[in-house]
Image (cartoon, rainbow, N blue to C red):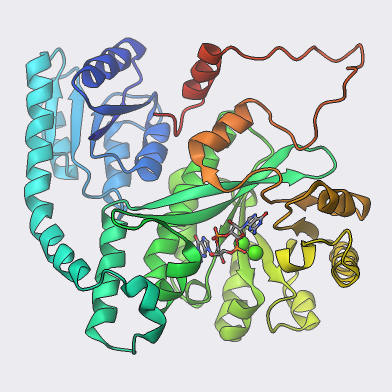
Length: 447
Ligand code: C2E
Ligand code: CA
Ligand code: CA
């Protein structure tokens, strides 16, 4: 089903378009202003955008200009909706790269005709590419599994790169989010973005399978940029909807860390999405830092200077020495799940976890425990003053709409106390229609 994004500040027109297009079997997402529109276009990558020209703050021209500068959204067909039929407006829109222009009031047939024509043109352009990539795919059915045996410059490798490229172009990647929870309050205070590949033949492929390949081919740069953009757009939207505090954590691979363009790309992503640097945390492993210590170290310091938070991931499993902690002044330290597992009863894991929490705190870092699966592990972490937890006990990584419903419901780690103190406003569960109303009002992800 084709997905259309409607960016329109007039509620009546927006709702009318929504109903009409849904009636004609399009999947419709709406944004009530330009900034939301850009965020949704970048996180949802719709098949077509209908956008009002006259809007406060970011008008239709600004929206189009921003999207055309972005490699992910640059080719999405874009139709302007305008109350004016002024030729200069028309020309300005076309010069910026609009595909069509509808002057209000337009008829239902004009609208549906314009949409159908744009969509069929796009299919004609992308079809030859799709056929070529399908041929590559045919030779590659199980290559993802066997990729460790593939030698450096083999045709298979190139074809695999094409497969990953196609996945990127066709929107087969998706970002899942795993909530991060404040252990003292039980509140969700952020999430880690974890990429998933929804392959048409193989279903969901874990990043553990394809990230190493993407690293080798260099495509991790584009995939990583896409993850960053989607995650920042999503976090900006949740913050704008009032879910605060909220920090979005994004993984950076070794290759990304040694990319000289990384800082500029991140600055651009923050500008485009409107996310504050302090709401972004970049996770890097010790191994990624060691791999290219000079460049990675310089990049890391530049990112920190922008106000972005830096976390050391999988702490204790890599090759770094404690000297790294001193050298880089990380904001957060993530204890790897191999140490968290059974920390409540495994004496060695208990010793390591306790020591790492103390070490982190004495270096003024926030300590995050990953892979928390049981109540007993959680109780152990709480007893030892670990700050934040993440793990299946609270939630697996999930698509954005599911996380959004947790935020809306203020789902917490601990069940609320049985007898509520008198001053506390009693909890009134939302009825299903109210829930869905709240969800769609919060602006993102619910379709
Ligand atoms: P990671 O950064 O250590 O991410 C945590 C992994 O632990 C995730 O696996 C998550 O699903 C899993 N996990 C979370 N809670 C639990 C739990 O309670 N029990 C168990 N057994 N596992 C848990 P996932 O999503 O398969 O990701 C694997 C690795 O792939 C990540 O490890 C990260 O290194 C890499 N990765 C994922 N997304 C990205 C990305 O966008 N960019 C880069 N560069 N790497 C990514
Ligand atoms: Ca991580
Ligand atoms: Ca980790």
